[in-house]
Image (tube, rainbow, N blue to C red; front, side, top):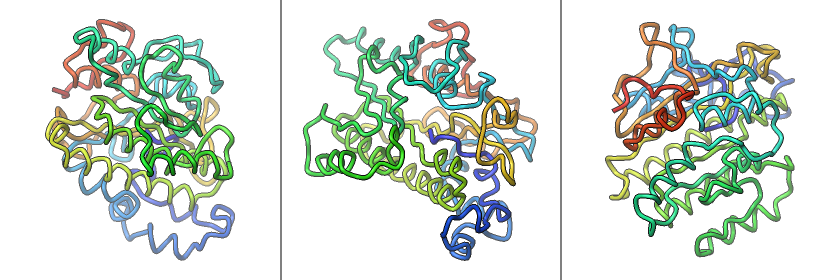
Length: 337
């Protein structure tokens, strides 16, 4: 997941009307246009997120292009982060979750449930689930105190695996780099720490939340927001190349990619989201890999999908029934095998 990335950029690429002096804070507008703006929306979105459009979509599927009649949205009605992450991982909204306060989620997530199910089947099995987040509140979302698997968020060092020189450097960078956001790191140390864990421990289920797309948008820095989205695409590619090169993962791994909420429209509401920005409920949802049909970009003939369907979809991909455990959760995506 990447926080607050708009469906508008995912499907249409960079918005030239937002590449202004006010929104770029000293970045070269000409350079940004050269990197991200093309003659058509289809070309622009490939420039912004080439792996998504050259590999994920043609080999899998993507929902949420409202201009083509496809809708994907959150159901919690709040359209901000904690409720969105919780809805994604539990399959339902919860009226008790109405702020971004870092408090333990009272709900069990599909991550926690699957990890417990696997341990039941083999008590000797070590943790098969792990969660990484740039934002420290992800620890609350997955209930780090109770969940029973490795959680690494914010500026916390990763100490649960042997410390290699690379991991030692990542831990030092988290500790020593000046903090632009007190409760959230840049995406790079979070992603690279997650990759170190993935290579060392080979979990069956990895959850990763990145945050810069939301932070730069709130700051009104559209150029940095585009750069962050482009880096997320590069991270998706690096992650996918690793799992496809690894015999334990190749051929039976699935990638699901979405945000926690959307944002408003240009010229100003793109910076924000929430109840007062109703259109910020709209998101995108992409998937590829094992169990995902190669249906590409979906349009008006496809029923709307919701964020609340993700948890049950994850469980179904592992042959489990999340709706039996949590009846109020959304149903799995219908075509998932």
